[in-house]
Amino acid sequence: MFIDLGNRLSQASAPGQESRSRSEPPALPIVFVVDDDISVRESLELLIRCGGWQPETFASAQDFLAHPRVRTPSCLVLDVTLPDLNGLDLQKLVAADRADMPIIFITGYGDVAMTVKAMKAGAVEFLTKPFRDDVLLDAIQYAIDRSDTALDHDAQMQILRDRYARLTCREREVMGLIITGRLNKQVGGDLDISEITVKAHRGNVMRKMNARSFADLVNMAAKLDLRAAPRSWRND
Image (cartoon, rainbow, N blue to C red; front, side, top):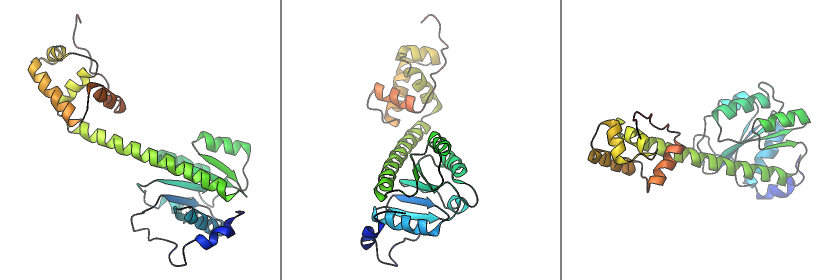
């Protein structure tokens, strides 16, 4: 299937050193492969390993779904035609539950309609067998980079959510008002507390959210999709 796989075999690890126990934390980005053809799985496993990634191969969609979710950059090289759940149906499940795992489709029976459907559902590439090694390797690198970016975004969002969770109810009320541009005096009137108390809460919000500036705090609120506090004031 691959035109230069033979040239890469000498670079592969020796037998017995080619695979890692799945119980060990992965040290490398993982490329998952789901294909019911054992010869394809074996070829892809060698190619992926030579590309510098950790391969994990499966003969069916159900075997893949039974594998625990990983929190490391990864992608899925997926055959369209599978013995149980087909590739397009598996793509729907992955997109819903593992958005940080881009999908590369490979098939020997692709058509335009199938390609369009897969790409519209978020696939990063759709390759028809036979294809060149470098084409697949480039697609994998692109997918791994996207996965790394998605995981980093998720990690940053979790940090923001954790910081926001540490705010008291009153501090969240104050934050919801100040991000709209309300002055401390106005916030105090809205919440029926003193301006000094508002300043104290505002300081706590800035410190707990680790905001370097007011603009930084507003940006955090936008990322968290916080809704502005309802306006209970009149005349201003």
